[in-house]
Length: 494
Image (cartoon, rainbow, N blue to C red; front, side, top):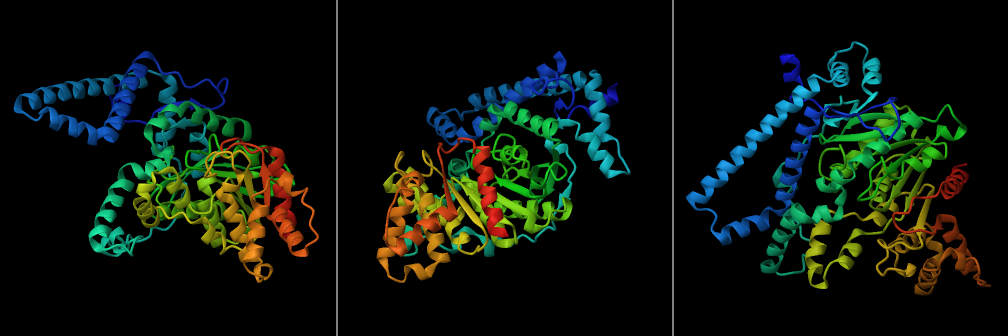
């Protein structure tokens, strides 16, 4: 019992045993494990909040003069007492786990070595548990890390026209901004507090994928050493649609458990979902290079491990996920690309959300650290593509309620001008006509009557590449519209 308790000290947390009871019923720990776990989770949450609030706490402590010997002694005693109590809770939780037959069976299943790797994976896939204890299922060759001298962010400046005495402080501010609050504002899904609040919803989503659709979870290691949490649903034996794999790329607060992935699955397609670095159980930080390495590893996993040909893969990107989807489309000979509620360039959205006095700092942060310029990537892709625009999008529109300010309009316009340059030889008048028609709702565009052949061609191209969806930014994409869009791209591929 003592040996088993010692093994349970830092063993993974068990959330659910699949196939036991209803989907919304979680694994029930006994009272000892439950109490210890709640204390440990609470302390971890408080530590996360303290980390984000540390600059303000330090200023408060300095102002109040809490760094005296007497105050430090009291704080040391307090922290020591809390540490002892947390250590006791670890021991109590371990004893509770060791005395729970279900947990002991789970621990033996994940600890027991197996010569047959496939049988071992099938055994552990019956459980939902801490993903850091999950074995690596697919690994991409590691890349060498460039030296700091070659890769440091201060070697270039987005505001190069400024004098040195203004440029250098701006670069320093940008560095601290992106590494404190900046990236978390762009990717709020990385916040531990948000992940804690939606933890049960994520567990429920995984349960649905596994129990209803026979989903297979896997850990994929990227070239830079991050571990990506993925879920694969195989519908190849269900219908002809299942021969096509839809790889979904979620938004800045999206997870495969509660995001895009369910739509292609319900429509009968095979689907592969994954979480951004730093989202859910995926490790790392979602800087553009880490994002590119993540989708690259996911694509290699789909091709080499799941055995899908690139020409049978459709990439589906929602919102900020359009960046990784478009990058993969440029670098792999895929079947088609679908971009839902996606923008052209993150810079314009960021500047719109921040005070105008911050515009130079915002430009420095975006162009140096998070340059998600989707339109530049899309111009390098010449395969079948469909853009879906949300008519009531409150995130991608610069002015809420005005569909003409939707940044997806600029993405569509630039793509059409790049793919069909012959239509714009007349100059600015054709570009203005394109912008006018793109800014209209699809239902209004259908009613346009024009005798100009050039205008008719523009209207046909807009209808060819885009669709409107009545909904807000986070409204789930309807199965009917997704099927229509998939039929469209299938026609383009034939």
